Length: 605
Image (cartoon, rainbow, N blue to C red):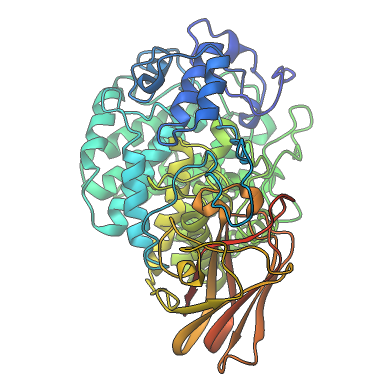
């Protein structure tokens, strides 16, 4: 019987601690509640690490209040607490490396308000904006740049990513392998051998069967890329240990951990996926006890377990006393890994229902696990700790596999839409990517980065670089706050300049002349926060419209109550030479209202 969960508050993360006091406190808790209060010393390290590239005075002040010291040393791995992030071969088995603490949002308002709306307000404590917007839909370039930013978080002395945990590091390695496989790069191959050499003493085995499954998948991926047999052999060693987690409780299935307190979705989904992938890479595999035999047994059990609910979503696990669906959270990664396992099983089992089931789960997730603009959204956002920050990328990684198998248009559209939002809305100047893909970057760590990289990797198969039709075109507006803040600055491709309009009787407009009629189906607007200003100055209520003659405009998008720093607008293709933005409410902050738009972009797709 599973002991009651003793976690003081969901959202904390278990931390590498030799005494195991913190880890023990959550025995019996599902993965999603295995988070514990990070000791004060660790909080300092994680806070300073999270501002590696942000240079945020407010965060540093908060770190000082907590008694933090060391400054930049935390970023370079010099802090003692970060050295706790080591493999199971050198620390307590099953204890993850510390997860990153979410960086608090800096106060936006300047200490001294501007004298009037024409004054260019002081930048808030956000990171500098991306200096090069680049062509939209160039997912290969996006992925390469995001992978470089992820690799910058890698510590070759441990072969891991100090800003996140043990199982997350396996997913980060997988994301780098996928970038290489999709783009033809070999930039990170040395990381694979380093991670293997530094951590193989434990055979990547610990107390948690799901952790083991992530590493098995990472080494299968590494084998596919390099054809080095040691990686495949390691995956088989890990799988052999995973089979020890199967018993007759609840009719079968793997336990979550070797403490045998909880039977849940993720270790069983990983067991399915690892088994079928090892089968595909093991000539002659078959018969009782074979990889494919285990895969079939796992799917039969899982399908009958009840964890797939009536809405075609996978709940977290089983109730210990009834062996029935516990109605736990429908985490995105629980949907994704099962989708991937079913896609793989369909390649080896003549059952047409497998892809149908995978698509039904994908459809349910794309409908129900999204935010107000249709971007994938974790139930825990905006605060997901060290675990939940990883989940969405895992879903996207496996949705890609389904889309490649079925070529379903809605899957492809979802993949490219999410990648588009993540790159344009959640990125800073160093190409770091945040937790919520339709919102500004919140913090920097390898879990967030590799998760978003998974989304970009998924989109590379449908790379469609498109030029910004509005770039450097003629623009006019009904006002300007000051010299250098005219309409032309709203289409100059620079995130250090803007169009600003102040005293215009609460009506603001800007028109862009594309120079000729073009087919337009997407516009991106970068508001005040995208340029580093107070997010309260982001355009609140506005409408976009198109015209062929510059006189009669037809609406293509209307937005009310916006708070985002970047908004992306998709609509049915229209023929237009002129694009217009009308602003009826320039901001949510009541002081010094003015229209502030850093860039208006237009694309054919």
